[in-house]
Amino acid sequence: MATDLTAPAPTRPDIAPIQRRTLRLLFCTQIIGGIGVTIGISVGALLAARVAGTALAGLAQSAGVVGAALLAVPITRIMAARGRRPGLVTSYLTGAAGGVLVVVATVADLVPLFFLGMLLFGGGTAANLQARYSAVDLAEPARRGRQLSLVVWATTIGSVAAPNFATLADATTRDWGLPPLAGPFAFSAAAFTLTAVVLLLLLRPDPLLTARRLAADDTPAAPTADGSGPPRGAELESPAARGPAGMRAAWQVVRERPAARLGITAVAMGHLVMVAVMSMTPVRLGESHSDADVLRVVGIVLSLHIAGMYALSPMVGWLTDRLGRRPVILSGVALLLAACAVAGTAGHHTPLLSAGLILLGLGWSGTMVAGSTLLSESVPTAARPGVQGLCDLVMGLAGAGAAAASGFVLRAVGYPTLTLLAAIAVVPLVALALRPVPPTTPDGLRRSVDDIGRAPASR
Image 1 (spheres, rainbow, N blue to C red):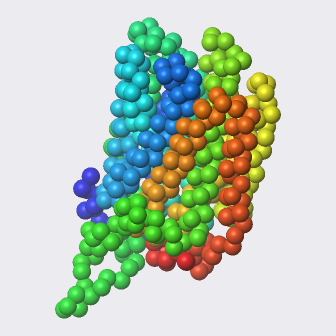
Image 2 (image 1 turned 135 degrees about the horizontal axis):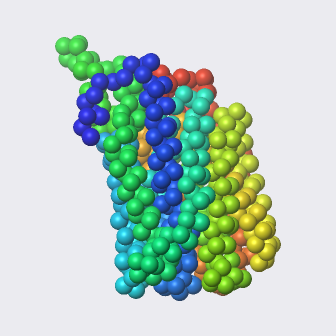
């Protein structure tokens, strides 16, 4: 890992091939990691209902989301100090350990260990989410939305099919003596481990460290007493050059930038609504389908939902670059509201529930892609890991709260009221998105990669 810190900085003509190679690698690893994440998500609530009871079913999703949120803090510190690669590898390996613990807890019927495993399983989700920021580090400003969305879209290939792989994984591992629904988590652990190994070996040079070198090369060094100035690249070793690693320092950066605040809010609220509705839909389907049929139906419905989340993300990214960040955020909010209306009035009609979940995924995609792009370009390069970690922490806590409450709301007042409350929660984002936000840079998207990290975001 030290080689990333000591290797000579690439020249300008080297940036394009580095970015293309990084995008190809991220694309491939997102497929594998997406399989691991989605297999666990597709059966997590059902497995929790069997292990701990229906009222606690939402806590399985909540534990995973909390784990992803809390892991954003140490992962951010690793990235700020050593780059994207060690942070992503650590996160995926943590997710693999969590998958193993879930299997062990299910076999031994240990409820606390089960939720601890789900907490650590969130490491896979954290890595999958953090990977999108790696696509922005060296991206041309006019292509940030598209290249970020390309990495988001890559998850589609693995994630859409993954819920249906759960049936195969479950059947295979039953022959090994594992309890029903535990096997998919063993497959998730294997997928996370493979992804970590590929990233460890191939994500070189590190995109974040490369972007920092470019920013350092473009920043005049302060002269020393004899007027010679420090050696080139020396500023990379200082904490200031690495940017704020703590959440308090990252919040200070965000607080001073309205565009960054809008980006974080869009990502967090879109995720809150999506998690609240999606996490209890398998339980809703279980009310009208037999045990023998429910896993197949859940697999189909969640596959359609995940297709809505990821399949059109390249178009969402293109629209983000073409129309602007805020219009796409507002469009995402409109889709989330439509999703809540359709799913909440669908009753036990599976096709209507599927339509609602597709709209839910499309709305999430709009707020995630446009909000993440707006956030990343609103802060200097050195501050990005800390601010991006803060974003995923806030997003995770919002989703965790929604997932934890959703099981109790479903049991107390039913699925339609749950969707209504989710719709109400997203309305304040509309007011924030309609407020005038100063431009991120004086010349907007005309900045090239040569300017990464140089111009401060407007306050």
